[in-house]
Length: 347
Image (tube, rainbow, N blue to C red; front, side, top):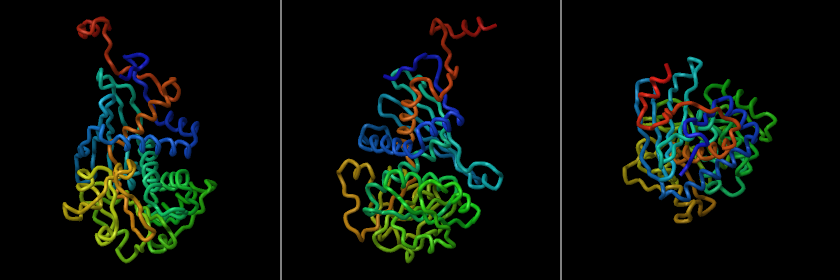
């Protein structure tokens, strides 16, 4: 059972406090920590209540709820995806999340998750790459240089020792932004003029584009043997980034098959297309990379257990009351049966 220090006050981590927390811990340390929490929860995969996220689609984007529980704690994330927002000066993705005690049903943490989602997404990618990428991989192609690109690069550096990143985006300003932000971060950055240029010499190919459409960011003839593909941009129905021929040649790894068949790259494949859930690799039940010529593909759409892991991590970091504010969001009458009396006494 989880108990907040004061049952009527819920720790709230604002964007400002999240940024302060990241800088206090150090971004690479935090990425490694998050990866450890995510990996630990994949190890106990069978203890979670799992369901595909609840999505509300519109012509301009999607709003989703991502819930899960391990029987002791319950967590959910609210997240949107609106690619058109960038042109309006708004974030494509925003999010917040809540962790609650199953025993009482009381919330024990409310937090921003726009920054936290970027961090946990990158941490998950790099944790998976640790299991699937070629041994000694030092160079990554980063195709799609939006809000996630720096986080992905630094997570790969922190967790697998990445040394070089090759950037490409149809918007050259996005690539320049990413290169500027990564300067002095210990990664050698190369700006590329095409996807073909970006993947040259890269052992890890990361695709993270925003357009909500079936696109071909990587065609079949672009991908040679022995690489690891980190495909994280195709994350809703009708949105893909890879040619189907690549999937036919690759060993494909997913988070939760039922969700990924709806949202991931494998939505373009037959219902019986074979995949391996990444928890099986982490738990030692299935092989990951088995030879140097194998193409491994992580069809990452993001799953609720990863957000649960991130919420657990933040809860543990703010237990002493630092980097959070007490939020008065729970009614706490002296007599639990007298909610009306509490209201009346507030006159």
